[in-house]
Length: 152
Image (cartoon, rainbow, N blue to C red; front, side, top):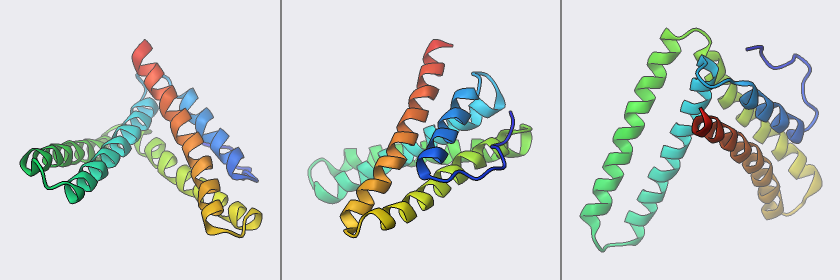
């Protein structure tokens, strides 16, 4: 799969669109698709882990069950992180595709932050702007991965 064009995007929206196109071009069963899928799976596990921690911190009832759920999430994360590291060293193209996902989302957020600071003086409005840009790209790309998994 070809790397992103050398011309730099001018806006966070353009970078967001490039990320979505990158995910859309990754065909099911390829190393690139596997890397993209693993990236989203790991992000989902991190999010679920954060939710369990928040629940544990706010709810004293049934603490043992909640701690157990948190440990299960931590084990899933550790296993996927280990698998991802193995894939990076064993599957040609996997590492580049995985890093492309990480770097593009980070770069997109940075551009969105700069744009937000130019457009909005209120920090809440800036954060909302950055969040909208990130969520649009993230959830649209994740939906593409899920659809390809479901239809293959």
